[in-house]
Image (cartoon, rainbow, N blue to C red; front, side):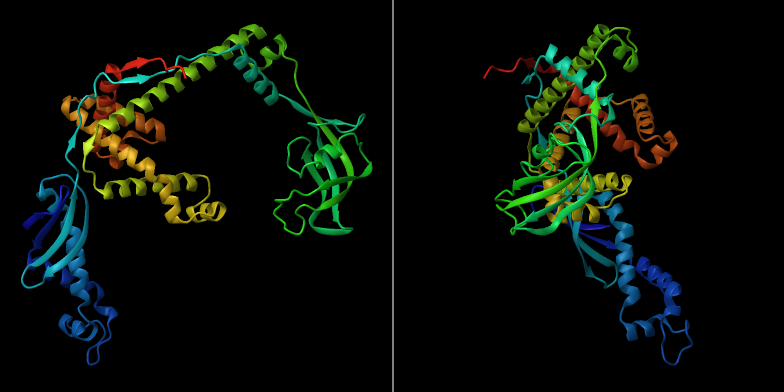
Length: 427
């Protein structure tokens, strides 16, 4: 089917290929039979006008669609015949309809990749450390999560209390828009209100009516209020406080499988250490992969980055949909548009493409072997992760693509196992 191909640059070819004229006639007849009833032609009953008469009256409607359909049906066959790994086909056009249908398109191929020195790389890896302060901080977080809220009616409001109250604000003796609410709930000290307001609530009791005098910040969003003094008339209806459980052996028994607080602390320490070790490993791996990218020598076509951005955008969109949102909603909330949104993925996409090319080349250079058992294991892992049957995964994920994914993971192990890990240099 390929008539000729001309190399334009390292990864771009102009390819001319043809499709047999008989295929064009067969496709035109199929389209004619499927659509003839849609066309009204004077002198013919509806659905009985000949193809050539319809095209004289309406234009080459069957020919145009047939040409497009033949291209879509045959382009993958041409890519296979081309013989090199094609990452994109674009700029397609029809060169001739005289006899065979002749098309011309640009084929973008995967670049030639070179990489050396990927074994024995030296990267910094931190030694995980968990201090007593880390353990106490995590214990306090757990204590906070197990707290309870109780009503307070025997004392005035204090910082860290949650207060339910009515308020109305006045500036220059006049009430202003947005300055009034009833049964508003506010945690004192949270910084939700303008400076001085929450502090002005402290010391006042349930049922008390009082004024809170404040000054709006100079940079306040409402220009008419910026920098202006104001008074809020306030009435407190409810005061609530957070009661923390005692950190003792009983607490340990309530929230864990341990009988003493000391044992529970040691378990917390072990969990924190595991987390720190995973973070140190991930940080070192990222540095190792960055070092690989620096070693990569390849003339990478821009379309590979664009396609990876497309993939990342689709993944993000799917995650939004799983949470009941779509991209239009997201753009409304964030003020982004598609161009700026895609731009956020650009740097990530460049790194992903470069790293994948580097690892694929390493897998090739190391003659990484992927067994059928490796592939089946990976299919089983995917099925478990997505909670769908293995047979269904196999209909979605092509085996050759999965085999290459496994080879890439093994290439990571080659690099990781040969690396030299050193402690971070003191600054």
